[in-house]
Length: 327
Image: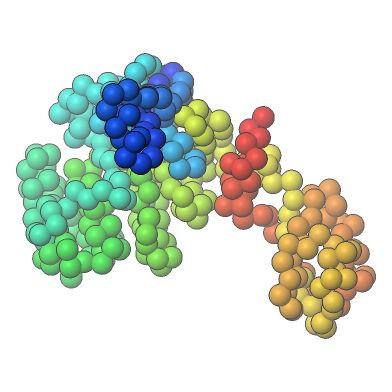
């Protein structure tokens, strides 16, 4: 059963274009120039109940706009959207009690109050029974390890502590659908890992349907098997992450550890060097040339150790966006 169904979603923005300087400002008072930005242009997809899907794309691709349409914050210009059987923009109370939207760059916590005050307020807003509230709060606080910050003003918390408390505030009513928009933005690698582990555990334990947007490919690679790629408002890929790697990564990385110094210029003339900082030499080799290239490397270079790896997912996605070859 599809928890989320999107058919031919369209959302356009009419944007004012102004020439620079005082003269440009005066001209815009008399005759304004406008152009349309296609934030979502004929987007269609379905997500099953309990799926955790990565929704990625470059800045301005339409990710956040799509999530806002799914959560009912924006009314689309065209198309059909069903989330748990509801039209999101009707904003029915029964619908709002079953979803949650977490935006890494937006706060729902009250800045001058401790997090527990926001939690108590959300309990009343979502009409969570006392017993369920206490059980859920205790569970989330323990999972995210924030017992010692619940009564400290939000303004005095670190970014990582605030993000953890944002997640708790969003999950107190146990939503069936969770929209996560850049939940690890600005966090250090340790905190990113803790947030990822929590999202994964929450998804598995509660079978929540989750759409995750992130510019950190580590988030997507660790959490999502299925990814959707949006670019300039259009959904250009929807499938398994492994399929992206197989389809668009036509090379692998051959890492060599050398036991004797060699001339980098000479090596570069013979092998496809990606990087070389002695003693580590990394070659970027076409998949069909792996056997022959490694054989030549073992024969011509003083190799102490050798390993073959897939290219990093962030490199593949970066090339995908810059090359724009989605065929």
